[in-house]
Amino acid sequence: MTSQVIIQALISGILMGLIYALIAAGLSLIFGLMEIVNFAHGDHLMISMFSAFWFWMLFGIDPIFSIPLTILLMAAIGVATHYFIIRKILNSTMLVQICATFGLAVVLRALAQLLFTPDFRTIKNPIIQGKFEILGIFIGKPQLYASLVCLIAFILLYFFVTRTEAGTALQATSQDRQAAEILGIPSNKMFALGWAIGLSCVAVAGSMLSNFYYVFPDVGVNFSLFAFVAVALGGFGSITGSLIAGIIIGIVESVGGLLIDPSFKLLYVFAVYLFVVIVRPQGIFGRY
Amino acid sequence: MNNNISPRLLEAKNEPLWYFNKNSLIIIGVVILSLFLFPFTSPSKFAIHLMMMIFMHAVMAQSWNVLAGFSGQISLGHAIFFGIGAYASAYFYVKLHITPWIGILAGIGISGFVAMLIGIPILRLKGHYFAIATLLIGISFQVVFQRWPEVGSSSGLWIPINRDSPWTSMQFHKSKVAYYYISLIFFVGSFFLVWLLNRSKLGYRLRAIRDQSDAASSLGIHVSKYKIIAFVISAMIMAPMGSIYAQYVLIVDPNNAFNVDISILVLLISVMGGVGNIWGPIIGSAILIPISEFSRIYFGGTGRSIDLIVYGVLIIIICIFRPAGIVSLIPRSFREREKAK
Image (cartoon, rainbow over all chains, first blue to last red; front, side, top):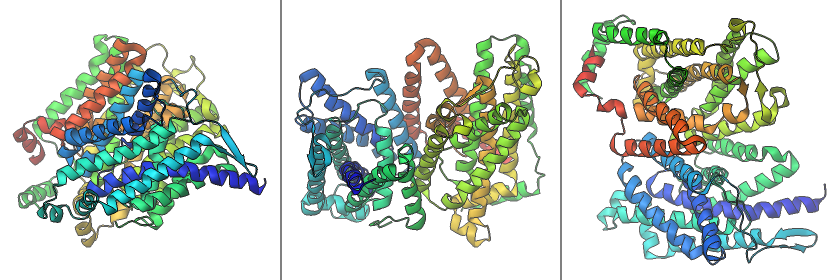
């Protein structure tokens, strides 16, 4: 095993990690805002991948051009989810909240299976394809562009949350709901905004993933598990934390798979989760 | 917390553990007797199968309910113990040629032990952290069993058909009624076990931990010890269902034994019926299992996803409008009388 192979694994790990980071950021944002874990997050990712797929299949729109459309769709789904389900269980026990989002996950996955069948699909000949070589290291263009787009989306998200008025209102609500309401920030609207933004992150990640990943109803399962791990690792509610955690997970997955045994990839990531929650339950940047 | 609860607690304290209200005793007795006599009305094979599935899922949900209802921890990985039970009895029979009856006991023991090993580190975790940890551990078990040659890797263990000695091999090919009685016995047994647990000192301590863990701790209750006990009991109730299922379908593989869907299903059944209520899992199972079995008949291959859609929608509706489950639809006066007596 040469160092080249390890660098190769490291780079592909970082590239995937940036995508995990954006997915996790959406989850983290929603959790930070209302302390609800969206167990349907992976299935929202699946929907956005199918959205990219169907825009290509039916209208011939390449996934990179359909990103705005997918974002609109997912933001609408996010607001609808908040309006019809989450709004009504905000003050319920944690069990009820878990069950409601889990129930949503079951419904979305089963609907996708019913409507789209469990077949694996791919987008043929997208604009971004092929790979290139630098110093003997191969980098797939779809992976590279996907991670770049995710990184840009992540930076936009960060500036939105920290620099704009709506973003600071969002932060205020997540820090203290009552105090924010006294200052005239409508928390219900902020929650809806949080869901719209959280699922927009997923929309970007899903569109870029559909360039090189199979699209099928269960695709979101592993991504959502990695997102949970990333959010726990970075600290629930911390957006910067999820970026670093996402990259760590990407590296653990690919380098662990290379060094030990690729068939146990999932377990290394899960081991990271167990280690973190037992040793440092608040995560790297967590405030809980 | 509630002042009006203390006289009832005193009353309960003076009662013997096996106290039953006379009326409820009669009702329960009649129901159990009619369930035992049900096969003599010569029902169809499907009816026997359906009843058996209801019993099994009620026990599985009851197991989940013991953990959630008594200790307040939400497990998303209860399929672990189902899978261990299934693998234990199958492994004992296929590789060691030991009768599944002993395999069931072994499965119960191993499940309890594994629950203790898992529980010691993760039962300290709260809320979402515990739920996600159990979800991840559940999937890890599946991944490990898929690649463990000793237990047949991905193809699993095939239990050879034995027509000569149905009792020692626990295989009943002529009639499924035997499976019906086995699952019914476990159903009744788990019901009384949970009833007993509910009224025992252990049950009161566990509920104290669930409601006010700091207060319970200050009264000298060892919080993490009792949570582990609840987890172990819960795992031990789950395991025999895996064994029975393995003997029923005669094949155990990682995808059916450690399926995440099992973990989700027991949670949905319990929440549907009512968490922390002994009747909850039974009511939930009696409602959800017929839906899935009938949809499998009417919609064929795609039925699986239609029943899941119905489940998911029902559970969301329950969460929004009736967070206490269907049990809470039963008139309050009736339930209070049941509880008080």
